[in-house]
Image 1 (cartoon, one colour):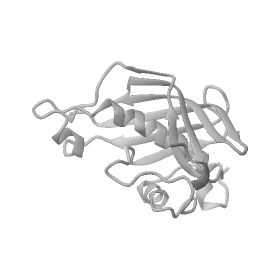
Image 2 (cartoon, helix red, strand yellow):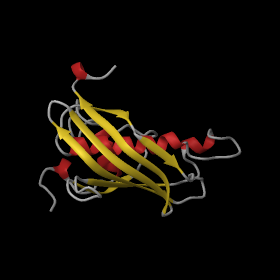
Image 3 (tube, one colour):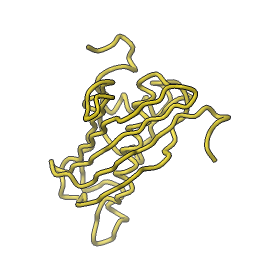
Image 4 (cartoon, helix red, strand yellow):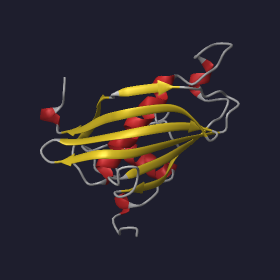
Length: 177
């Protein structure tokens, strides 16, 4: 059931994601998504604090693939492919968004990943990227930390898998160097 708090919706369109990037969704000093072109998804189609592989919460997002996306022009000339690090960054973006959506305070910072496997690539001819993040642990104490596993699919086929994605939220005085 959707909450009355607009930041606790169960899905977000691009306008909602941009509001988060501008600091309007969770507050200026709290979790924010990057602005385009670094925002690596167009919509969140599902976000819930229950469900997923470990019943600790799940977030699902999508990005429409267009041949004119900025990274295809430079990576690589004559052989365009989405850089793998951008798919990984999208997963970190989603973990941080989830922590802000839960109501945690602080700015999001990626803290690492346990294991990453690439088994395919995103080409300008593809149509849709889908990201699935399943939370394993969420700490909402003095330390705010999300640990999750993620997969990235292109046109329905899994091409990236990430284990133990870690994102923390930090107050200005407590951010890692």
